[in-house]
Length: 88
Image 1 (spheres, rainbow, N blue to C red):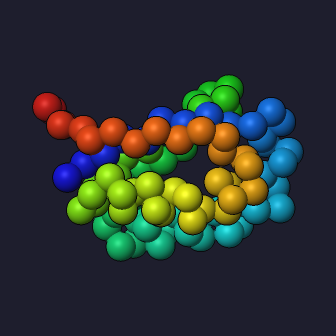
Image 2 (image 1 turned 45 degrees about the horizontal axis):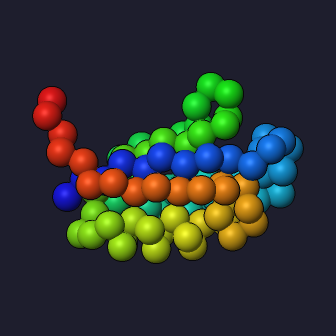
């Protein structure tokens, strides 16, 4: 099943994420290699994050997100995961 992620970044996220960026990107690459992550990235203003996952459950996606260094270090401040029906 597919899921969409919508979340927010902290103030000054571009600066605050720097020490954690390598770990974050490596984790996303593992998710992509495992076939879980389809796409993920910030909005142009880096105020929000959007992603699409292919997973067994919403809980699986939430667990992946909460294990991410950006969540653990407060770079992401809110995350919402919703089941998604791809029409096209």
